[in-house]
Length: 520
Image (cartoon, rainbow, N blue to C red):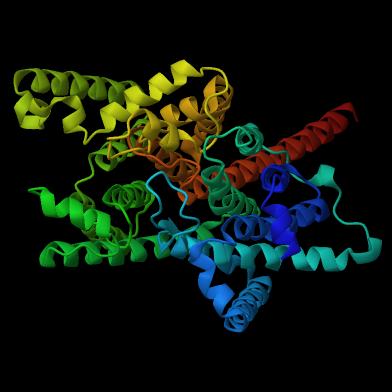
């Protein structure tokens, strides 16, 4: 109780910075022992900070009323976590497909009731948190046990691969987000974003980056993803057939007032469902480009048809645009048709502009741009206005909804649907420049010699699709898919770089041997 009382004061802000530094160390530190300690610190400090925030909230009333039952439940949860960690320690290559399998599943929980609307539930990736924590423990416990009391020296840090520029910028962005939470108008949201998204996803990236993504592991993960996408699509088909929305009362209310019906499957939002299905389609099409086995080609084609049906029923325009960019990336790289793809894209943009000018009513523009975009145009202009008011440092991490609601109290929407606008309004030019550098460096790294590796091409095209979706919807670093793709991309880049280095060393040895023989 004393601990939580202390943390309820000014210390949570220092705690957010501390946990951000630990997450950054997990990403950047090359020494295994130091990285293991940072990972353990992040695993311990994150739930402490969260409990400190919500300890006196109504959501934990049942714990205060029934402490013994809560204690027993916590013991069972920790025992299950330890059991999974022990299993993953024996079979570490199970972690990537297991993490991929739980990526879409969210559980509605109200963490603190501090939103501008006075409460409401957050959809949290509890299964993924459980898997990430178990995977982290499975890796760090043996390392710390082996090096207890000074133990034998471990692998020297300089033998570990150098971190890529986008990984350094990613770690820097996490720390900057924590620092800018200190003056935020909504510190609670910034804290929740840190402990629910940035910290666990940093651990996920660090673990995925350590694996050798050979044909077998890639096949397992893609197979799990395809089966999962088919199952999610069939849930969407059921929703469409019964005109029933599952797991989202908000979407059910929207469907009641709109003449059309959108499905969401297990997701809280049809656009998030559409995003997931679009990325799966990009990955499967990448497989089609390089696969030659007929039976597998038939299976992938059938899977694509089913997943496409789910995407269509989501009625997510942002997801369809993301899919278009992802497919364009595949075409441009695979067929060396970059100029042609850009030309086709330009023609489509011009044709679309002409169609809008000739018949705006067909596209809903008789309601104006804001009406056609369901209020998102106002969010963009409002976010730009916020950026103009504080262009350098912004209103603080996680503050967009609070400040936008203060300026527009009658608006039903308060969450920005365009990530660059969100970053600009909350973090000003300081955060915006780091965000842009992160995105550009990630794209440059992923596109480097991408045509030589089909898996890298698939990851790169999926990342492009996801990035486009964040420009029209939301959730870039708040989406585990971003960190998953960057983690796999980092592993593939490191493996490719190490392979090239080994080849260069071998070539140099052969050249010296040839030179000596010629001299003799």
